[in-house]
Amino acid sequence: MSAQERLTDALYGLGWSTVKKLPEPVAVRLGRTIADTVWKRRGKGVQRLESNYARVVPDAGPERLAELSRAGMRSYLRYWMESFRLPAWSAERVKGGFAPKDVHYLTEGLASGKGVILALPHLGNWDLAGAWVTTKLETPFTTVAERLKPESLYDRFVAYREGLGMEVLPHSGGSAFGTLARRLRDGGLVCLVADRDLSASGVEVKFFGETARMPAGPALLAQQTGALLLPVTLWYDDSPVMQGRVHPPVEVPETGTRAEKTSVMTQALADAFATGIAEHPEDWHMLQRLWVADLEPGRGTL
Picture 1 (cartoon, rainbow, N blue to C red):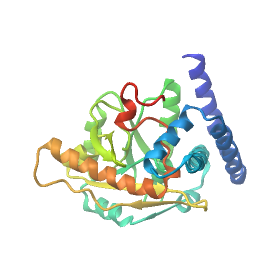
Picture 2: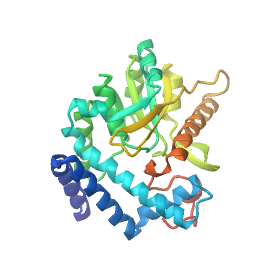
Picture 3: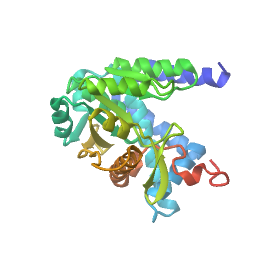
């Protein structure tokens, strides 16, 4: 393990051990202070966030983009402060910490016994939403996590999410898809963050007018298992309670090849994600390249 990896692991360990013990108002202030400090330094992550916001809000000038990126970093640090503290939250605090709309799509889907796939972008706090599902709805679910370096950091994330009632599978290794399909065929719930492709098999979609790649997994799982595919968007307001919406199901097209159906369904997911991101861009925590133009040689500096 490199010195940088040891430092990263130590910092996350400090967050989970220390931040969760802080009074909530203190944690909120700490998160905002860190966010503003990082934002002022204008490192690569902040610049990439601002560049992504420029596509989401194309008429925004430099001043507006700077305001958005500052708000975006504050939202991102709110996510981390909440996540560090979630293991110490009471069941009542978790239940009262999220107020999603149109949950009937989820509960009715689960009641049908066909299985449900929830697909989310990097909006708000998906860990809090997951903890709400396992606590308020008393429904366990399976998800997939990107393998992080160092391995000890990945292990921390897995232990943290399993502690919240989630079954966590590694993204790499090739066996995740089969396990997810089995869970769905058994009538279970699968939750996937699905606005950024981590493989070479992503589906091209139009996203805010430009081409991006998003994972094929949610659409393929719905086709193969008959499970319901539901987009979800999350956002913060000025209260301590996160807001959210479960969108209507993405239907499997009646005609077309598997690839054609997957393309149509993934585009429908992208469109649903775009509605939530357009309404609450500052809560979209995308500090990485996303659009194909930014991945091509010579386009973009980050």
